[in-house]
Image (cartoon, rainbow, N blue to C red; front, side, top):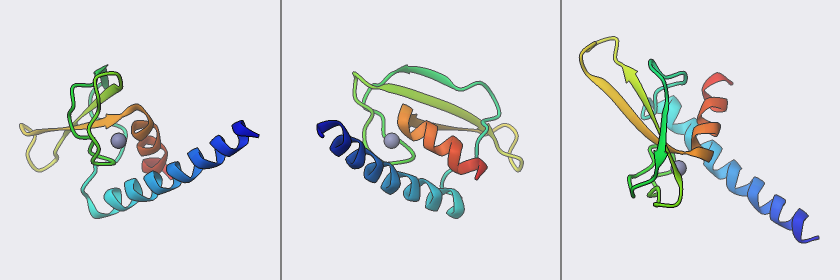
Length: 95
Ligand SMILES: [Zn+2]
C-alpha cells in the first residue's frame, strides 16, 4: 500500500513539473531538445534548474545542455536541469 501511495504522489509531482516545462517550452523560456552538443552530467552544486527553478543540491545529478542560437552563432546558451527534469524536458520537447 505504501508503494502505491508513493507512486501516486510521484505521478502528481511529475504532472506539475511536466506542465511547467510545457509552458516554458511554449513561451520560449526553454529551448527544445535535442541540444546542439552533447549533454554533460556532473554532481550538483546548488545551481538553479531551468525547468523547475529549484536548486540542484550536492547529492543530485546536474545536467547541462548547450544550444547554439541561430541568430547569434557565437552565443551558446546553456541550460541546467535535474535528472528528472531533463527526462521530462526531452519527452515534452518531442510531444
Ligand atoms: Zn528541476
